[in-house]
Length: 620
Image (cartoon, rainbow, N blue to C red; front, side, top):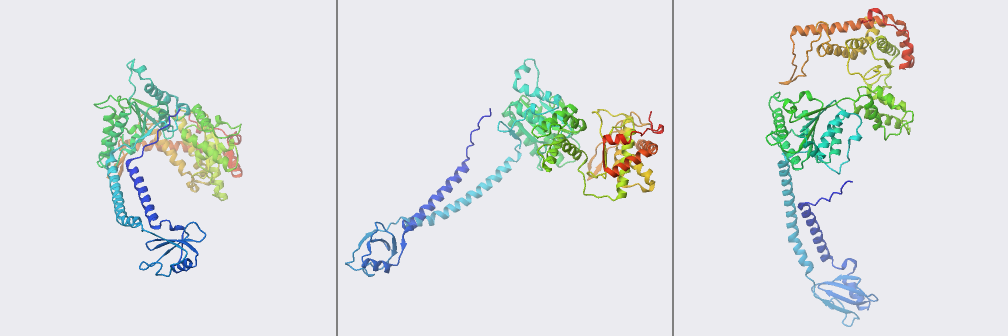
């Protein structure tokens, strides 16, 4: 049960401002009361009327207080009128008869109003000046505090008042959860490990692609551990002033040690943890000082504190080796893209609070979303709910899920874009070329859908989905991928001639070239350069110019270019052989696309059931 936090105490400055405000209000009210007295309900009448009424017997009492008269008419038990007489003469001198039936009472005028008025003239300006100087001092003090607090850590402390996330709320990533559960268990039961001489890792590095759930797992650790949990982003350490980042690191670890046992979570640690020695001064020096301070705090001369550091990054390859050594980040937890069973579990979590029809097939969606991260799956579930709401449905259907999946995977349909008949037919042959080559190639993924409706940035889409999750890709699978990628351009060439090919194949050609180059440089799948890898550095900035480190000679570069060109040429020849040998199937699929615009997997298989792989296109 969450504890009730005590109400925060008010700061002295706040109490002073409240006290000063009410003092001014009360003082002003006293002045108003003194100036107005009890006359706010009395009717003001001329002195001549008062004298006339008194002589006629219509007034029973007149109270004279200096020049102020208070009149009580006949038949009334209290004063209802007020008037002012001439200060140089009495009532008799102003016309009141000596035998008039009226009681005249004289009172000494009260000096309270004059005193308060004089005090107000003196005090109010003094108070206003004091308030002005107090305001200016508070402004100066605030700026001074801001300057003094510039080196303070901006870490957020998560406690019992936050909504907790626990490991049971997170589907998939069982191996990663097991690693982190050990950290939590050590914090809860340290003696069990200490009895065997075991030491918990000082640092756990969460490594994974964007959207795989690194930050979510860190939140689960915060919810499970029940110890102070400090969260900060790596970019919050670095400022334009040298030394600020290191100061914030010291302050953060000082707070954590004071609250030990505690956990520090640094998100996107690559912002400050990059390999040292790559900078050329300026902000890079500041980043390196910040990194040095982190290294010292995690495992320096004083290392007896019970503080565990969690960090997350998707760029572990750029981190400094000193940060990754045992004693600092002892454990590296890889958070991979979810497998099929994990994707199904994640989808069930995201659809848990979304009303869906009974026949909604989550397993089929999990099968189609190979390579999707947890964030992608959450986006699909959210898009499905939006689509269902847009059509005023109370439940999510399979059609909504399919549309959401396709929208997230390849982009929304651009139905507003209208193609003329020639462009439509050319697009149909282009997509039919992709589909036919992919259908016939023995090691290609099966065709899932073909459409000539523009989606995202494309004029049409031929979609291939693997029947199951794959961890590796062979040479012949890569070559089938290259052939089907070039199928669209080759289909245009066969139907319209070599001089009528269009720019529609631009993205296909870029993708094919990237795959061929990756095969040769990164995977060692070339012919003459087989089993050799020529990894290229990502490069950097030197004097505002992008540089790349190329770990091979110019002769090797020419050989790589030749290998890439040979792979593209072979893929083109295979695609052309397949399309020419199955011209009838190509025409049939293109005509059906012109007619229906979108064809599903089963229809594609039926149209292409007679398509065969010619001998000249076979790899083995």
